[in-house]
Image (cartoon, rainbow, N blue to C red; front, side, top):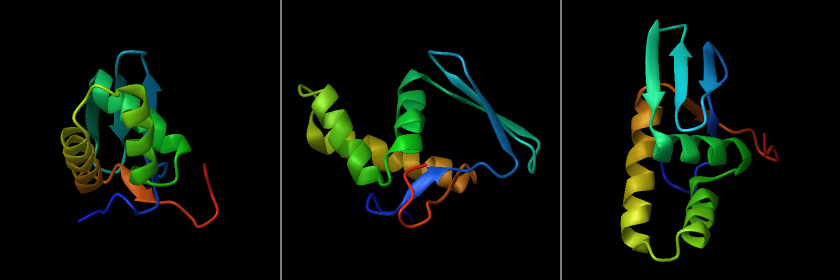
Length: 99
């Protein structure tokens, strides 16, 4: 199980994706599976590309959506990270790397 303090990044090995604006389509060559991220999941995927931890993604989301309940945002983010990780779409980010 992942923690929001884990250093995460979208998996690039055997994975290709197309950003279509409102959604992201991911093709996992190793599993021969296609995943479609809705607009919310796509937003978080993009943020994981640039933020070293889920906690930093949470801080960005809280700044962008100040009217949202912080506990709900945190739970939704945690659930999505766990789902992406279970599908092999996340990997550990090397120490000192932002990308």
